[in-house]
Length: 210
Image (cartoon, rainbow, N blue to C red; front, side, top):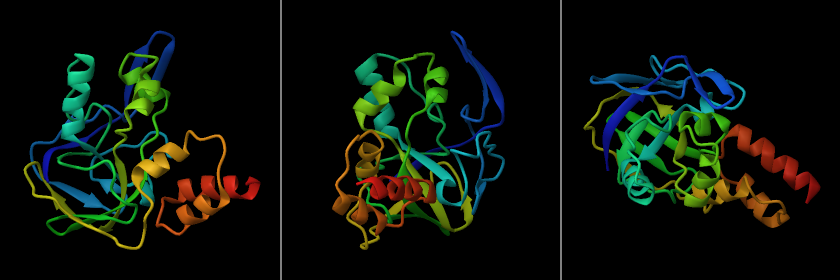
């Protein structure tokens, strides 16, 4: 695997149809090295702290190969940073286990959850139905916590290390977000994984009702 683009964003106002919002989803490629801290990439701005960012979702990565799939499937042009990811990585698998790690030089990232699309992504794509398309595609990209900070740059080699402690995958959590009924045993298994705290709270809420 290799980083094909490092992306950061500042607050921008975007609009489509009757939706107008200020967001940090519009990422731009950074040509040089960027510092990765426990809270994410230096210079990247998070506008909605209730649902995005934080220790457990500090870095969002998306597969360059999945962008190629989107372009082929839709006939549209897709580019690095379009979905709001910080790192665009060639060869990044969608089925990483929660707890698996990426090594990028001194930087160590741990997978914590899947990206669940919201209305901001649909507005960004100027397509009110894009959230549904994103769900059906099951190519969500991955949120990571930063276990060891450092510097990253486009072209850096990326190595994946299996965490070994979890059988819960990113796609398991992506599908969980849309399921209307849940088995208690499966939810307990999810809670054994080092999932992001926002996701953990959602799982615990569902488990209380299971």
